[in-house]
Image (cartoon, rainbow, N blue to C red; front, side, top):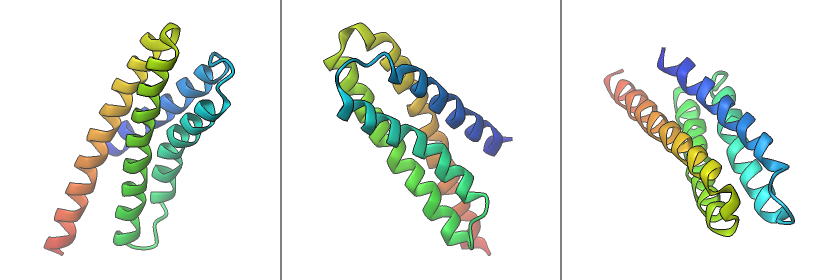
Length: 117
């Protein structure tokens, strides 16, 4: 199921970001921004499960999408600022991009179904 795949991908990304956190030396602002954006993706997906309405559901997915895009940005900054972590950052960025595409698809599917209701 697409929803489960999306949730598992978000959790996996969060776990990998937590593991990366300690490897980033002396750049607390970068670590914090990346941790907040990356873990917020899954947190908002889990909140969406208990949305108060279809509009609220879409809103939470859109927040996840924004956080995902921000996470990709910070991973690109990390890859440039810390070349020793570039391979890991690029792998995470690809995973975030995959999650972003799934979120876009989920949002579009839900919006289309809302139009038909």
